[in-house]
Length: 337
Ligand SMILES: NC(=O)c1ccc[n+]([C@@H]2O[C@H](COP(=O)([O-])OP(=O)(O)OC[C@H]3O[C@@H](n4cnc5c(N)ncnc54)[C@H](OP(=O)(O)O)[C@@H]3O)[C@@H](O)[C@H]2O)c1
Image 1 (cartoon, rainbow, N blue to C red):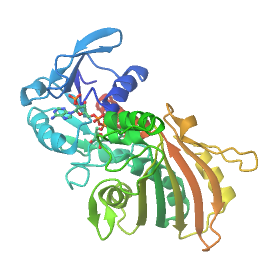
Image 2: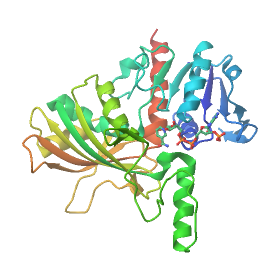
Image 3: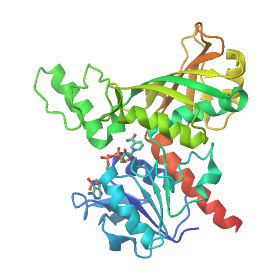
Image 4: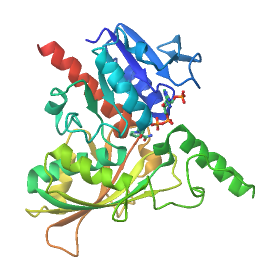
């Protein structure tokens, strides 16, 4: 058990879920500290029925803390993680800053749990759109070796944090009332629209979000030969990312086999009855830790292709749940020593 833990970015969209998750999963600790910027420092958070004051994130905040779970913007994580590590505090970090650092394991506990134990102070949790995709890929990769993935995402506004959630609601209201609204985080109106750009222009016409899906997938599976071609799109959905995924495997996997493989995988739930109109939808999957899969079918255009639809709560398995599962792995490894 870690005696003293901290949640960094405790007031954010992911931080709020991390708090909820620690409570739901009865995560063990003696003392808990909540850290955020000067905007929230001094405000109160109620956790397990008790009021806690949010403290300012600064180097000294990590004195005596054994484990921190961080969900802050990248530049903030770049700065605070070394502060923590210098003070012997292990960090499970949600931001994108450390994920591709060769010294930092990038972990989805259902796929590469052992990597988490091989850390040098920082363990990264993947991007939300990557996590649900790799979890869905895992049983297919084990059964037939995935060579290529074509994925289009339909990403919820909560993926852009608290302000993204506010933008959807306020922007929709303004649209319906024919009023102007100045978006806080989106470069274009998201209400009654969709935006085929998430992140910045990064590499040969692909965005930073798309390249995360390429590189993080290869790192998690430890296989640079897996080819990923992503298109990431922001849609006017409040929570839960959806993905249309097509995988090409070395060995043929039929739709029936895939359905069985998915159903037997911990963390995956299958809802797949097209004739009855049953498939995963974001509105139904919010608040659940699972990765949902439906519309499983064989590709009509290539021999070993398999297409499916994948939905998951980006704030849960895409972020908070995965981070807390990593922290639980660390607790279990301590207990095993
Ligand atoms: N949203 C998702 O679905 C998702 C999924 C996976 C990973 N992530 C990653 O998780 C991180 C947090 O995302 P989010 O959606 O939770 O964003 P968010 O709602 O905007 O929350 C950001 C958090 O970081 C804190 N923060 C910002 N600047 C800070 C500073 N200078 N010093 C200390 N704390 C600071 C904020 O505190 P204040 O209240 O003081 O502003 C807030 O608690 C990002 O790196 C994001 O890429 C997000």
